[in-house]
Length: 114
Image 1 (spheres, rainbow, N blue to C red):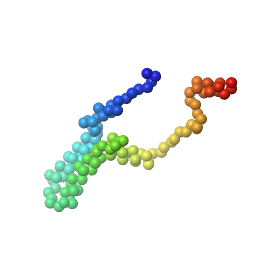
Image 2: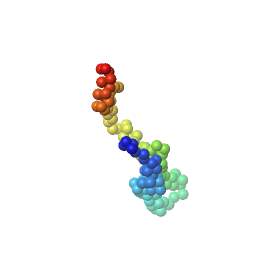
Image 3: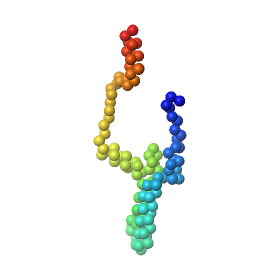
Image 4: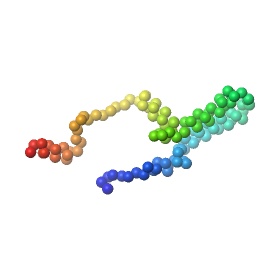
């Protein structure tokens, strides 16, 4: 097959839980949900603002593990954006007319000298 491999489009989804989540995603969401439930049991209030603050850990972790197009989830997207702006990037450029294959390089030289 000349070292050309065909990888099915859904090969990564089969390794995910329910096709969308990794174990780390579920742990993050579970911790946020557990923290919210504990706060709901401990804090008794009728104030809407405080209730939104109590529900915020579950809402924030649900937002972080929400799937996003072209990325795994929002957490991965935020991590990629952070790495893009903070890590040093080096771009290697070989030039316009570089031929890495020695066989092709030699055959093109022979044609030019004939």
